[in-house]
Image 1 (cartoon, rainbow, N blue to C red):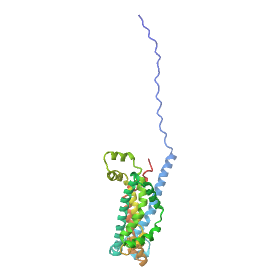
Image 2 (image 1 turned 45 degrees about the vertical axis):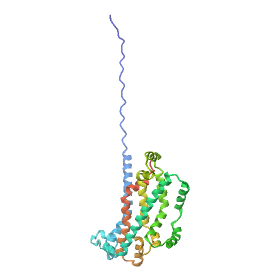
Image 3 (image 1 turned 90 degrees about the vertical axis):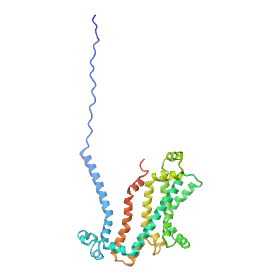
Image 4 (image 1 turned 135 degrees about the vertical axis):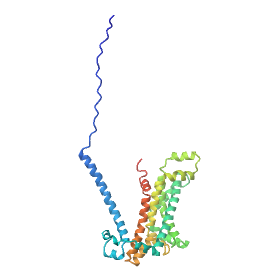
Amino acid sequence: MTVTTPDRQAVAPEKEPAAVAPARPRPKGRLGRWLGSSLVQAFLVVVALIWITPLAGLFLSSLRSSQDNARGGWWTSLTSPAQLSFDNYSALLANTGMTKAFWNTVLISVPATALVVVIAACAAYAFAWLEFPGRDPLFLLVVALLVVPMQIGLLPVAKLFGQLGLFGTIPGVVLFHVAYGLPFAVFLLRNYFAEIPKEMLEAARMDGGTEWRIFTRLVLPVGRPAIASLAIFQFLWVWNDMLVALLFADSSSQPLTVELQSQIRQFGSNIDVLAPGAFLSLVVPVVVFFAFQRHFVQGVMAGSVK
């Protein structure tokens, strides 16, 4: 018996679509991107040079004698390095008024910064996550204090400090800076703490954590960028302040800014003392800023990208 099988039609295999090669960027577009990045980098370099030139000039002036500074500008020392020496800094260390003013500045800036950060962090956590009567009206009052100019409270507070025996003392200057730095600090940290996910705090409470433990072990580490930014702002403001110190500090408690101002008024030509003193007053905030630069950038950028 012969079995016939139906003819099978040959089916041609389907051809796979040819891979499409990625389009190469046009030379013009590549050149435009290169020029754009180069222009941005060149612009940033120019801005950095403009920003650092006064600092470099002040530093070179502080290393030159008063005679050399009188004969020419600080840039002449670039071609005559023999003009540079640390004799002015030796004279600065021998100047008891300047050294005492420097330590007075430290004694004012560090406590004023630390107290503002600690008190503001505790108050911000309470305003953000604790329920108590009058919380919202009290926070609105704190925000309202932001619009009160400092100059309004100078004379009344000076009179109050005179009655309390704090006028002309370092604690009086510190208290004034703390009082006027707290509204902004509480406002800043409260808004940052309020962005912490509520589930994290509820999970910590379910695990038996107390409010103090949650605040110190959870909220403070999460809020470190904002706290670092606040500390930088407060320290720079207090370190560079002259108005408050000029009014509330006497000759024994005046900071470096007031001492430099008095040196200019009394001895207008003693550049050998003023230049190193001014550079010392300037370089400390710069060092503090660059030391906490990473935390500062994180605090500024916090919440801008989800």
